[in-house]
Image (cartoon, rainbow, N blue to C red; front, side, top):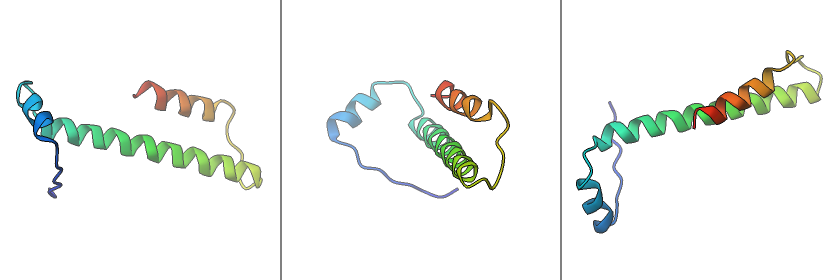
Length: 74
């Protein structure tokens, strides 16, 4: 696993230490969710672009379902 380092203000660090949380695991999951959301957005943009240029046909309801799924995962 790669290492990513962040800096936080001393007050924030103090507040974090008062919460019973595995911050590394929490941040890993937050980053994973954010990346998945961005990948879905990019896929939807590509589909919309392809639809505009008539390269591909998007199944009815697919875009709406994808957007709803992205919103629900927040």
